[in-house]
Length: 109
Image 1 (tube, rainbow, N blue to C red):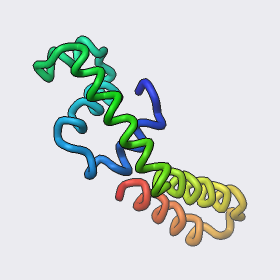
Image 2: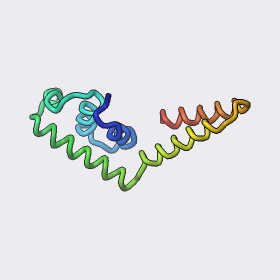
Image 3: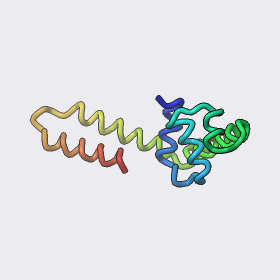
């Protein structure tokens, strides 16, 4: 399990804005669940350098989210779609499937 699901959400939203090195560090730590020492060894840097890179990358993602809010909006849309699905009657299978397809496409884009 990821150390911080919120960081994984932010990475999903803003990964393309990170440098290759930032992306590698965040992925190793949050997605592959490596320790700082393991991450540093994989990246060929000191543990302190890995920590600093991780700290700066995390701060950058949080800053982008505070300015743009993409992850927050994504979660709002997802929650809205879930609530719609819960309210639909069983006779509305076509509409229900359409919403589910939209939701799956939204999550995978």
